[in-house]
Length: 246
Image 1 (cartoon, one colour):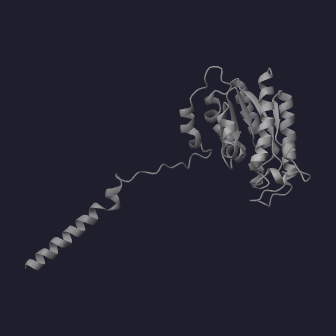
Image 2 (tube, rainbow, N blue to C red; image 1 turned 180 degrees about the horizontal axis):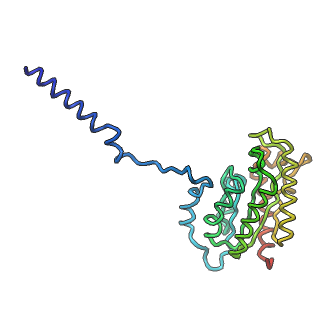
Image 3 (cartoon, helix red, strand yellow; image 1 turned 135 degrees about the vertical axis):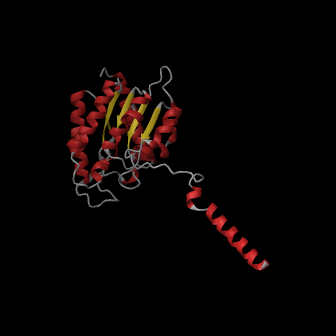
Protein backbone atom coordinates (compact mmCIF):
# COMPACT_ATOMS: atom_id res chain seq x y z
CA UNK A 1 0.00 0.00 0.00
CA UNK A 2 2.82 2.38 0.87
CA UNK A 3 4.52 1.55 -2.43
CA UNK A 4 1.36 2.35 -4.42
CA UNK A 5 0.96 5.65 -2.62
CA UNK A 6 4.59 6.55 -3.25
CA UNK A 7 4.23 5.63 -6.93
CA UNK A 8 1.12 7.80 -7.34
CA UNK A 9 2.85 10.74 -5.66
CA UNK A 10 5.85 10.25 -7.96
CA UNK A 11 3.62 10.30 -11.08
CA UNK A 12 1.85 13.42 -9.83
CA UNK A 13 5.17 15.21 -9.29
CA UNK A 14 6.42 14.36 -12.80
CA UNK A 15 3.11 15.43 -14.44
CA UNK A 16 3.12 18.69 -12.52
CA UNK A 17 6.71 19.42 -13.57
CA UNK A 18 5.92 18.88 -17.26
CA UNK A 19 2.83 21.05 -16.98
CA UNK A 20 4.85 23.89 -15.54
CA UNK A 21 7.45 23.68 -18.29
CA UNK A 22 5.01 23.32 -21.18
CA UNK A 23 5.36 25.75 -24.13
CA UNK A 24 2.12 27.49 -23.15
CA UNK A 25 3.39 28.24 -19.67
CA UNK A 26 6.70 29.58 -21.00
CA UNK A 27 5.20 32.05 -23.46
CA UNK A 28 5.30 34.87 -21.00
CA UNK A 29 8.88 34.12 -19.93
CA UNK A 30 10.64 33.71 -23.27
CA UNK A 31 11.70 36.91 -25.08
CA UNK A 32 9.71 37.55 -28.24
CA UNK A 33 11.91 38.01 -31.28
CA UNK A 34 10.92 41.10 -33.23
CA UNK A 35 9.77 40.46 -36.78
CA UNK A 36 11.35 42.79 -39.34
CA UNK A 37 9.78 41.13 -42.38
CA UNK A 38 7.99 44.39 -43.20
CA UNK A 39 11.22 46.41 -43.13
CA UNK A 40 12.28 45.75 -46.72
CA UNK A 41 14.57 48.78 -46.78
CA UNK A 42 16.22 47.93 -43.43
CA UNK A 43 15.31 51.15 -41.67
CA UNK A 44 16.15 49.31 -38.47
CA UNK A 45 19.89 49.24 -39.28
CA UNK A 46 20.64 52.89 -38.53
CA UNK A 47 17.58 53.89 -36.49
CA UNK A 48 19.26 53.82 -33.07
CA UNK A 49 22.51 55.25 -34.41
CA UNK A 50 20.57 58.17 -35.91
CA UNK A 51 18.86 58.85 -32.60
CA UNK A 52 22.21 58.88 -30.80
CA UNK A 53 23.81 61.07 -33.46
CA UNK A 54 21.38 63.93 -33.04
CA UNK A 55 21.31 67.14 -35.05
CA UNK A 56 24.41 68.89 -36.44
CA UNK A 57 26.27 71.33 -34.25
CA UNK A 58 26.26 74.99 -35.13
CA UNK A 59 28.43 75.56 -38.21
CA UNK A 60 28.76 71.83 -38.95
CA UNK A 61 28.63 70.98 -42.66
CA UNK A 62 27.33 67.46 -42.34
CA UNK A 63 27.50 65.20 -45.40
CA UNK A 64 25.59 61.92 -45.67
CA UNK A 65 26.89 59.09 -47.87
CA UNK A 66 23.85 57.10 -49.05
CA UNK A 67 24.47 53.86 -50.91
CA UNK A 68 25.05 50.14 -50.63
CA UNK A 69 28.11 47.99 -49.92
CA UNK A 70 30.62 50.36 -51.54
CA UNK A 71 29.79 52.93 -48.87
CA UNK A 72 29.23 50.47 -46.02
CA UNK A 73 32.62 48.80 -46.55
CA UNK A 74 34.33 52.19 -46.97
CA UNK A 75 33.90 52.99 -43.28
CA UNK A 76 35.19 49.53 -42.39
CA UNK A 77 38.26 49.84 -44.61
CA UNK A 78 39.16 53.41 -43.62
CA UNK A 79 37.21 54.52 -40.51
CA UNK A 80 39.42 57.57 -39.98
CA UNK A 81 38.05 59.20 -43.13
CA UNK A 82 34.65 59.39 -41.45
CA UNK A 83 35.75 59.73 -37.83
CA UNK A 84 37.69 62.95 -38.41
CA UNK A 85 35.09 64.67 -40.58
CA UNK A 86 31.37 65.50 -40.36
CA UNK A 87 30.68 62.63 -42.76
CA UNK A 88 27.89 60.16 -42.00
CA UNK A 89 28.07 56.76 -43.68
CA UNK A 90 24.66 55.27 -44.42
CA UNK A 91 25.54 52.40 -46.74
CA UNK A 92 23.76 49.04 -46.57
CA UNK A 93 25.22 46.13 -48.47
CA UNK A 94 23.10 44.73 -51.29
CA UNK A 95 20.57 47.54 -51.46
CA UNK A 96 18.95 48.67 -54.69
CA UNK A 97 17.85 52.19 -55.55
CA UNK A 98 14.19 51.87 -54.38
CA UNK A 99 15.45 50.85 -50.93
CA UNK A 100 17.67 53.93 -50.78
CA UNK A 101 14.66 56.05 -51.67
CA UNK A 102 12.59 54.55 -48.83
CA UNK A 103 15.44 55.25 -46.39
CA UNK A 104 15.91 58.81 -47.59
CA UNK A 105 13.78 60.51 -44.94
CA UNK A 106 15.18 58.63 -41.95
CA UNK A 107 18.82 58.34 -43.01
CA UNK A 108 19.20 61.69 -44.80
CA UNK A 109 16.53 64.36 -44.32
CA UNK A 110 16.07 63.81 -40.58
CA UNK A 111 19.83 64.12 -40.02
CA UNK A 112 19.79 67.68 -41.41
CA UNK A 113 22.92 67.41 -43.58
CA UNK A 114 24.26 70.21 -45.77
CA UNK A 115 24.98 67.75 -48.60
CA UNK A 116 24.10 64.25 -49.75
CA UNK A 117 26.19 61.90 -51.88
CA UNK A 118 23.98 59.37 -53.68
CA UNK A 119 25.61 56.23 -55.09
CA UNK A 120 22.97 54.00 -56.66
CA UNK A 121 22.36 51.55 -59.47
CA UNK A 122 24.96 48.79 -59.49
CA UNK A 123 22.98 46.35 -57.34
CA UNK A 124 19.91 46.99 -59.48
CA UNK A 125 21.94 45.90 -62.52
CA UNK A 126 23.56 42.97 -60.69
CA UNK A 127 20.20 41.54 -59.62
CA UNK A 128 19.49 40.15 -63.09
CA UNK A 129 15.71 40.29 -62.55
CA UNK A 130 15.01 41.58 -66.02
CA UNK A 131 12.93 44.47 -64.72
CA UNK A 132 15.71 47.01 -64.19
CA UNK A 133 16.39 49.79 -66.67
CA UNK A 134 18.49 52.94 -66.48
CA UNK A 135 15.24 54.89 -66.55
CA UNK A 136 13.92 53.15 -63.43
CA UNK A 137 17.21 53.62 -61.57
CA UNK A 138 17.30 57.27 -62.58
CA UNK A 139 13.69 57.76 -61.46
CA UNK A 140 14.71 56.78 -57.92
CA UNK A 141 17.76 59.04 -58.07
CA UNK A 142 15.59 61.91 -59.30
CA UNK A 143 13.13 61.42 -56.45
CA UNK A 144 15.94 61.48 -53.90
CA UNK A 145 17.49 64.56 -55.50
CA UNK A 146 14.16 66.39 -55.52
CA UNK A 147 13.61 65.59 -51.85
CA UNK A 148 17.09 66.88 -51.07
CA UNK A 149 16.47 70.14 -52.94
CA UNK A 150 13.19 70.65 -51.11
CA UNK A 151 15.06 70.40 -47.81
CA UNK A 152 17.95 72.65 -48.94
CA UNK A 153 20.47 69.81 -49.11
CA UNK A 154 23.24 70.03 -51.71
CA UNK A 155 23.08 67.11 -54.14
CA UNK A 156 26.17 65.19 -55.24
CA UNK A 157 25.57 62.36 -57.71
CA UNK A 158 28.12 59.69 -58.58
CA UNK A 159 29.58 58.14 -61.66
CA UNK A 160 29.53 54.54 -60.50
CA UNK A 161 32.69 52.54 -60.05
CA UNK A 162 33.70 50.38 -63.04
CA UNK A 163 32.58 46.75 -63.02
CA UNK A 164 33.64 44.26 -65.66
CA UNK A 165 31.92 41.26 -64.09
CA UNK A 166 29.89 40.54 -60.96
CA UNK A 167 31.62 37.61 -59.24
CA UNK A 168 28.40 36.49 -57.51
CA UNK A 169 26.29 36.74 -60.69
CA UNK A 170 28.29 35.99 -63.81
CA UNK A 171 25.06 35.66 -65.76
CA UNK A 172 25.02 39.45 -66.09
CA UNK A 173 26.22 40.15 -69.62
CA UNK A 174 28.09 43.34 -70.55
CA UNK A 175 28.17 44.66 -66.99
CA UNK A 176 30.80 47.25 -67.91
CA UNK A 177 28.68 48.62 -70.75
CA UNK A 178 25.64 48.84 -68.47
CA UNK A 179 27.61 50.76 -65.84
CA UNK A 180 28.93 53.17 -68.47
CA UNK A 181 25.43 53.70 -69.84
CA UNK A 182 24.06 54.34 -66.35
CA UNK A 183 26.82 56.86 -65.67
CA UNK A 184 25.98 58.71 -68.88
CA UNK A 185 22.34 59.27 -67.90
CA UNK A 186 23.30 60.24 -64.35
CA UNK A 187 25.80 62.83 -65.59
CA UNK A 188 23.28 64.18 -68.12
CA UNK A 189 20.67 64.60 -65.40
CA UNK A 190 23.18 66.21 -63.02
CA UNK A 191 24.24 68.66 -65.72
CA UNK A 192 20.63 69.60 -66.43
CA UNK A 193 19.90 70.21 -62.73
CA UNK A 194 23.31 71.81 -61.96
CA UNK A 195 24.21 69.10 -59.44
CA UNK A 196 27.80 68.25 -58.56
CA UNK A 197 29.16 64.94 -59.87
CA UNK A 198 31.84 62.88 -58.15
CA UNK A 199 33.63 60.62 -60.62
CA UNK A 200 34.39 57.24 -59.06
CA UNK A 201 34.74 55.62 -62.49
CA UNK A 202 37.78 57.26 -64.05
CA UNK A 203 40.33 56.83 -61.20
CA UNK A 204 39.60 53.11 -60.86
CA UNK A 205 39.03 51.94 -64.44
CA UNK A 206 41.31 49.54 -66.35
CA UNK A 207 41.64 48.77 -70.07
CA UNK A 208 38.58 46.46 -70.00
CA UNK A 209 36.37 49.06 -68.32
CA UNK A 210 36.57 47.04 -65.13
CA UNK A 211 38.31 47.96 -61.87
CA UNK A 212 42.07 47.99 -61.76
CA UNK A 213 43.34 44.80 -60.14
CA UNK A 214 45.56 46.73 -57.73
CA UNK A 215 42.60 48.75 -56.44
CA UNK A 216 39.92 46.12 -55.85
CA UNK A 217 39.25 43.02 -53.77
CA UNK A 218 36.79 41.34 -56.12
CA UNK A 219 36.33 43.46 -59.23
CA UNK A 220 33.42 45.34 -57.65
CA UNK A 221 34.52 46.57 -54.21
CA UNK A 222 37.66 48.69 -53.75
CA UNK A 223 40.53 47.81 -51.44
CA UNK A 224 42.05 50.46 -49.16
CA UNK A 225 44.11 51.94 -52.01
CA UNK A 226 40.97 52.23 -54.11
CA UNK A 227 39.12 53.97 -51.31
CA UNK A 228 42.01 56.41 -50.88
CA UNK A 229 41.55 57.49 -54.51
CA UNK A 230 37.82 57.81 -53.93
CA UNK A 231 38.48 59.99 -50.90
CA UNK A 232 40.51 62.41 -52.99
CA UNK A 233 37.81 62.96 -55.62
CA UNK A 234 35.09 63.01 -52.95
CA UNK A 235 36.74 65.88 -51.06
CA UNK A 236 37.03 67.86 -54.29
CA UNK A 237 33.35 67.25 -55.12
CA UNK A 238 32.16 68.25 -51.64
CA UNK A 239 34.08 71.53 -51.79
CA UNK A 240 32.66 72.20 -55.24
CA UNK A 241 29.12 71.48 -54.06
CA UNK A 242 29.39 73.90 -51.14
CA UNK A 243 30.62 76.63 -53.47
CA UNK A 244 27.72 76.05 -55.85
CA UNK A 245 24.66 78.28 -55.67
CA UNK A 246 22.37 75.35 -56.46
